[in-house]
Image (tube, rainbow, N blue to C red; front, top):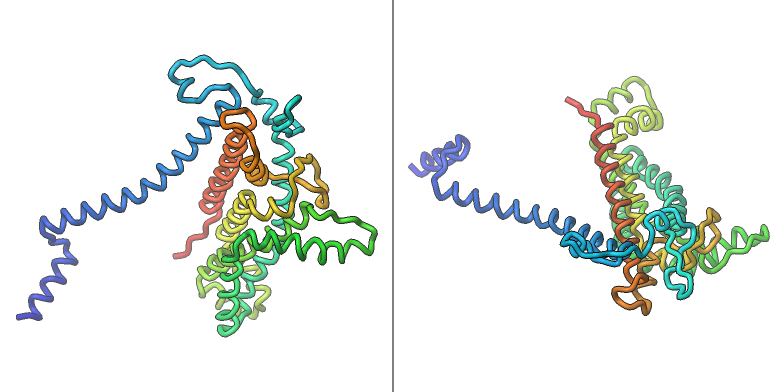
Amino acid sequence: MAAEDGSQSTVDAITGDVTAADRRRNRRVRRLLFGCAAITVLTTVAIFFALLDNAFSFFYEIRLYEFLLGGEFSQRVSVWEFVAGTQWYPNHGIAPAFGILPLLAGTFLIVVLAAFVAIPIGTATAVYLSLYASPRTRAYLKPTLEILAGIPTIVYGFFAISFITPVLLRGLLGPFGIEVGRLNALSAAIAVGIMTIPMVASISEDAMAAVPDGLTHGAYAMGASKYQVAIGIVIPASLSGILAAYILAVSRAIGETMIVALAAGHSPNLTSDPLAEVQTMTAFMVHQVRGTSAVGSVEYQSLFAVGLALFLITLAANLLNDYVKRRYREEYR
């Protein structure tokens, strides 16, 4: 009898024969889960409007909500000056300048250099883990990558100023008569690249592991080497995941703060010289928030204008990531 009751309960669960109490419980669970999902969306929207509200007062000396309520305003900083200006001196009392291009140049210089470090090494690591590494080697190497990903970024910053610049860069470039300053973009970029290697390697390896075994085994059966399988089968088949890993790593590098604040410098130079001292958008925000600018002043509100620009850039990178995953996704049946 007990067996029959158990079988009947299983049948009821499979056929959907549920009681009213079960339906009410399901509704409560669904609402709870929806509420958790909505929190993330509402938090993102709140952050965006908080930045937009304060950034509006940077440009027009009035908060956005006051403007929408019909308040009068006067222009503080020209939007064109902010977008296209080539000088950034917000704290210059006599003639402040608010051109964000030097901060953008410093940010993207470090991002590009970091990509040259993280993308090749991370991709090669993913190929090795997915095709070449023995189970024993993989069992040791994967946790090591996770440890590397868990190191605080400020530690990478100290590593850059205590080892990469004085030992690595000066040791390699010094014999050629090239002077390397204590703060420079290349040192920060190398540290950021090392920090993002685990992200590239882990996501790319997961994408490669999702390639059906039938494709690789078929290639091996036809006499292909592991290198040929990696280049001709695995990488093309997992391209959407690999490109997503690249974009996420670049997005992570754009928003990096402590490494660039310690190792790149605080001089907003519009330059492409990797050995020059530069300032990124995140480093400016750290430096500015530690300053003495009065709350509500144009210097203080410049924090939110730069933060809004950074938010839009990372949002664009995430949208590009979603597009790439949809565009190049391979489906196997």
